[in-house]
Length: 264
View 1 (cartoon, helix red, strand yellow):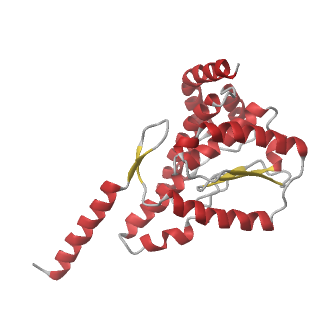
View 2 (cartoon, one colour):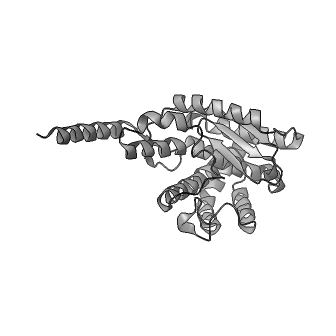
View 3 (cartoon, one colour):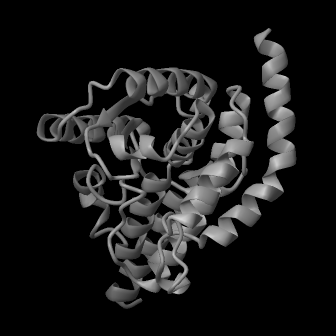
């Protein structure tokens, strides 16, 4: 047998073995995913990156913003503990006036820009944003993207995945321009985070209707969805996201009512 063919067979067999042993299940949706990154690796890498961000970006001391974020994040992160037990949850308000945004790092680090509080009017509305970001973490979306990148490189890139995971694909609200194929992948993950996030906030005792309210505000402000060129946008259109959120509302409302009963 030709040596080159033999090498390819061995490589393909090895890759298939890795894939078969590296499947995991996404919380809430039950989707199966390929994940070559361990939570331990990711938590370590993203902690260092988040520490650098805190050292280089101004952190808000606003009392209301921090109290709201603390209350919301504690309730939701407690609710999702078993979906990512190794996550080192940390939530920070960065002093970025006018920036209506939030981001999540795969190890459990979540940043909120102070400008977001110009849009959210209640803790329920803030919870919808935080739950969405937490959903990206527990669904291991960045793990998955980097794993797929490694598979495409078939070995040559797998060793380097760990060095880039802390800085690539982590800021879900401020994604760079990319190809239509990758953008479509991101749209699917944004939609999945919308669904998971709505259930998370409801289970934590926050009214899921607020997720729709926030999305309506984002649509009015023309943020959070790409409508001009949806094929090349990293987010589904606001209209698509609203339709999907409405379809999840009945299930989420039932979870919210149950959570309220348990709180009293």
